Image 1 (cartoon, rainbow, N blue to C red):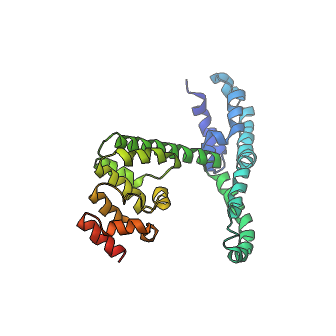
Image 2 (cartoon, rainbow, N blue to C red; image 1 turned 90 degrees about the vertical axis):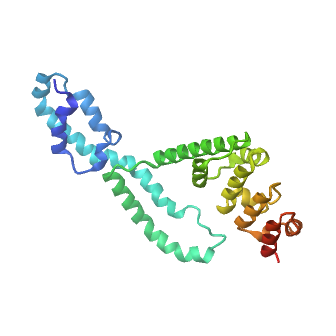
Length: 260
């Protein structure tokens, strides 16, 4: 026996207005309720009820497409338009933002209309779903980063694959304890990889401490960190003097180039 959704597919294709959003079951609650509760299961009853289910199905489809789903996305479209007004830097750029005010005022209804039509016609993920997906991606990235740092703290040397992943990882505030432990106990090559990661990308540990890694016991690490510095001027004067008189000639020469 042909399954009910398959038998109803031709009806849906004939009656459905051209809206991609309708392909997602979450976007057609009226049709779902109609299909589950009002369409008979048996073949004989199904065909006998067609004079009633065809207009009922048409009404359900039109209601979903023109009323229910647009109502579902209206709040997201409003939030999309409201993004134009979020975090406007009035204090730092008052006159610039004041000049942009008319453009924001004109753009707000345009953004709302465009977002509303796009979300109504296409299967665009809701803002809530997008936020949940972003948080899940951040959680996975945090777990991966923490696991890598814990391996370094346990004395493990990073391989080529680890180094490639490290370059793509983002910083999370929750990584600081694991990062400190890795710098304190990890092997020199792994310490160097971590220090290059934060210095070359300007991540918070390096932003908070421009001298991070310059007191490392290994001269190879000190030399490499000197070469990766983004803010040489932020290094304390006493540490500059120490590096200019470093026991390693390569460190001394590079430090004297940075701070003649």
